[in-house]
Length: 439
Image (cartoon, rainbow, N blue to C red; front, side, top):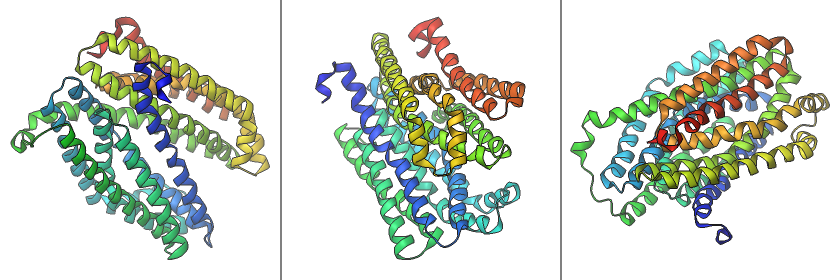
């Protein structure tokens, strides 16, 4: 099928399409988790899984810099044909992942009590969330190492291996969910245990695939003495620090929307959750092209090929415009039907329809931030990403603070401005200085 496209388009799609396909399994797992727990006797089981999984997701998402930095550094080393740097980008990130996993495990007794203090959830929900958290946190070493492997494979321009890793993880997780919860009646503990086993199983598969790719690329043996030199970690720590700040601001925006929406009433928070779930579908599709941007930008930067970067920018701009318009059209024509599909509560349906115009406009505003993030990650320009995010975050806060009297419309306006600012602040240096800003 890809043969219908020009060669450069084929390279982009060869990375983007497998990642989009595997990303689509993520919401499927969430639906299965909800379905199996939602059929248990008491509602607090569902609330406990929702709260516990949200906490785990937040912790792991904040450490997502492990994948991003590994992709950028590996892609640049791959473009420069520097086998030593290719090896080090994987192994150094792997050691950092294990260190951070150890930190999480050592601090696990203190994390859940903080949630209990600041959460308004009932005692039964908090108890079930604690059960989930204290089991699921043991997947930290595998989950963080899987991030590193995903990033490294993408940096090596291999999208098939990440696809197999994600499909293995999600499909095994779904099967074990059904077995442990419906078959063994392990309730919330079964959901958590399924995720832990799936994470370690996909890690084993990842190590097997790593061995195959390592041999195919003839990367040779590891210089362990070189890995012990702290000077080699300086760039990686700085890169990870800046990406962490960027990710923290992003999570704060969506956390603020959830908390402020809750303060506006149960119907508002439910309607926002429905509409934001559609925005997540947009992100799953755009992430595939963002991954392609990371890998191909990194390779071009490593090879010092500015013309290749310019061709890549043109292709990404085309796909960004097409995807943005398609999602706008989908939400415009099918928005009411999609809302009805997700909720049967009439009040939530009516409220979500009131705010649907914001969702219709968002894809065209947000698409550029996803693609430009991929470009900057591939070029390992994390400081520029951090600064752009801080400006965008400030714009979000000021917009809501100024217009908060508009209620929920102020939240959606602030989110729209936030997405627009992310794209503009990342695009401005490229407009002023061209591709030179990435070298």
